[in-house]
Length: 593
Image (tube, rainbow, N blue to C red; front, side, top):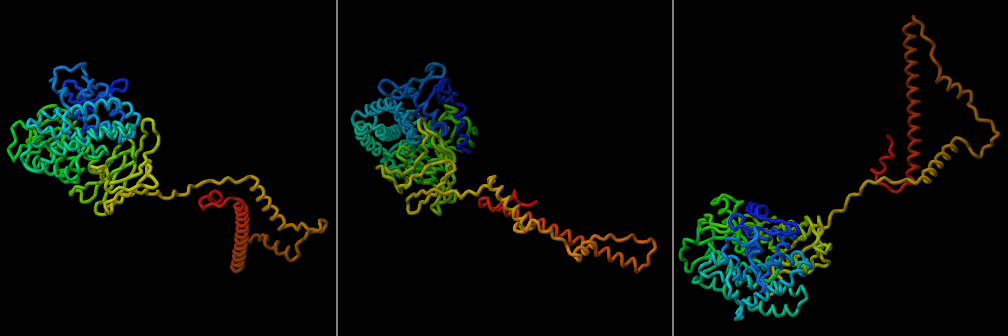
């Protein structure tokens, strides 16, 4: 229910103009016609990217057209009413890096899941300028950008650096991946060196979360980890580092407070929350719940999702008017109503499946996470721009089934989705846990189903062969010449049985003997009329004679019927002798009625 109802902004916020221009109002109620909001879009564009990839690509290309001269991607692409009216200029994000990082990650996700090289080619010049801008935001080379982020308004304690640096590091990793896809080895090498520095900076900040309680923590600190894994790109953090940070965030932001709304910023050393503490439930659905599911903490992930559900259904009681911001921990409504980030709950579906796709590399990742409440079984849909599927997984048997429901063409390509490698999880260093090579590769066609075997920690995928189709009834075509020959043979045989072709034609026709003639005449004798007055014994004799005659007539009729049946069988046998082999059901038209 929470996932489906969270999609309401697709209807209430979408703007589709002539010429294929598509965008979404960030908040039609409170943000006065502002279009875009690319930073929050990172958490909530999963549904759009999977089910409406053309619209998703169109809006991402609009951001590229709005790119600032220094390479920065603006938060907004414009205003529905023609200008930035009555809006705090700071909200335009001129001093924030997360909008540019978020845009690069969304472009990478769309490319990885669709394999659309034409789309990537159109945006490649903008990607180069965007990466140059990000590199310029780290002048001392420590891997941590100096500019702030769009979470400054909900993180007054300065914890937003963890969120911004994580996105920055993941964006640099995505940029390296895109450069390799474009065959630009020079830029890939230079960006990889900057990416390594960004990894070190992000790890340095997040490592403090689990070491002591003196650091103010930000609930969105693992946004970069979640975004990279969702796009099929190695995370900046090793699994153990990300897992330890997730454990600390869950303790300090979820378990420490009874209210449904999760505070974005948690004070150090267990201090009480300030009265103006904010919660962003939609972002928590992706950046905290999604990260927990990806890292193997399904119960914690579902708990976080249930907190968002309670804010909407038990506190505000309006699931179709979700705000960006609520007060924590009570969950009272604050501002930015009917916000586009509400759709972030959709990301729970691929996170539960442990699903990620690197289509250009032919790699599919599946690592299902089953919450305790589901008792070891998971049934979940998977949506991508190229195919829709259904996953059934049995944790106790370590087996599952992947059924392909629909397939779609990509821009400039009609080839089917082809998977050459499957695995469970993409590690920090680019290796894949439980990877198997497929020989032959698996092609995804509508109606195809695949067995999944997770035994021994390794994923194996094999096609389930469909059952042999039942033989369809067909009507054989009988050649006219064959039928004529058969009838001629039957006719010739019947005549020879009566007339001997070697006999003398002048010989007299055989006649019956007197005894035979007498017997035939007796069979056709008509009894004389019975007088009106006849003795009783005579009447008895007449009745017996009549019964005997009737019996003889019936016997003669049965003999004639049997001979007729035999002649019909002879015809059927002759006709069938020149026909192809057929099943009984195919001979039905020739059967006697």
